[in-house]
Length: 99
Figure 1 (tube, rainbow, N blue to C red):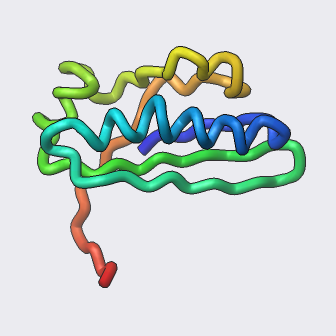
Figure 2 (tube, rainbow, N blue to C red):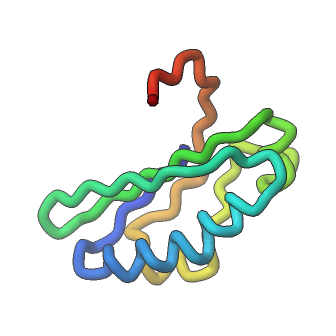
C-alpha cells in the first residue's frame, strides 16, 4: 500500500500519470493480481492510495527489489506530490469478501 498527496488543482493530471507510468507497469509484472487507486479530496489537497495485490512477497521483489518496503517514486512524482513517502506498507490478506 502506497499513499501520496497532491494539490487538488493537479489531481486529475496526476491520476492519469500515476495510472500510465505506475499502475500499468505494475500490473504487467508476472505475479501481480491487480491494483486499486483510491482518491480522497479535502479542500486544496487530494490524497491517493494505491493498493496492489500479489501472489507472494517474492513476486513483489520483481518490481521493488530485495527491500520491498522502500518506495520507488515515479520520475515526475516530485512535480506533483507534496512529499515523498520513504516506505510502503505490506499486509497479508486474511479475508476478501468481494463478490
